[in-house]
Length: 352
Ligand code: 5GP
Ligand code: MN
Image (tube, rainbow, N blue to C red; front, side):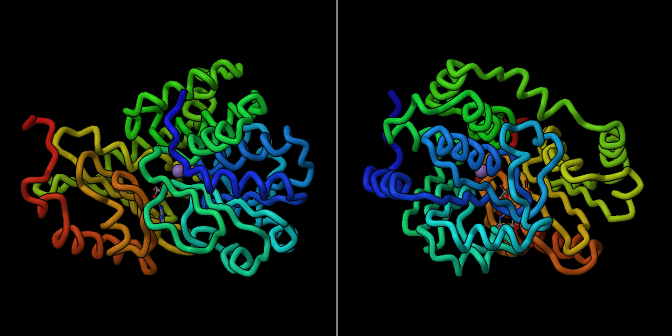
């Protein structure tokens, strides 16, 4: 029996919206990750199982190829490809789920449509400080993935039996990817109670791991080698490392979406490094990814210097300018607010 995390009133309201609703849109955040996809598709399968036939998952833009196997992924509507259709679906939906994000801005180019839409909006999310744009807000930052919240939500409606194997596969994928395959934010025993339930639904967790983490291209692995050998800058005094990649370098290694996933975590395997940044030149902006181990709140760093946010140990933001300017801004920020500035709170394994 799981502890009750989600407030009863929220469950009842959302349940009523589902029962009465005919058309549903589930929105994932921009650059959907495994959790955004897992939560969205998990809920999608659940609603289908309940007999709801007008359910669409809409994402602002593409997701990495290694998530294409996820059941239902092929039926998603990507706004970047079909803008008019995606917007029409959102504007006409009676119920709109906003999953794994806490403010309209995170829906990227869908944010205006989402704000304008009249359907009943339900947020299910685990990011701090949810904006007030939904009728029902289930926001639980202490839970490590939105996918876990979807499992809890369905069970609390008394509908465990309606979780199909495809739904369970999606939910597991989100739980796995938002915890780095259960290597961080994953000490709560109930996570494993839920995994046991998902296994009973017939999922093959080892296969899901392989489908997500062991399907990269040769050029991606070579890019990783290049990054580690030539592009990683270490700031020993600040217990920090930085990797930067330009468009030219990405093209040289035939970059496709998702190829740099996980790069930001690599420097954290160095003893003494507790903060890692990855700066990537994208076509429309410079993307900044931040990770930390221990107490250093990289979400505060992301929001203060890069207009972003996220979780304590995993966050991101954007920079508008050249990659060189982004590095300069990062180094200035590091000097102001790096881990070494939080005397007494730093986390160093070697010092035990
Ligand atoms: P990633 O580095 O994998 O792109 O993002 C890690 C986490 O940081 C995401 O799950 C999300 O919570 C947060 N994040 C990344 N980019 C942004 C951003 O531009 N704005 C905000 N608010 N959060 C972001
Ligand atoms: Mn998430």
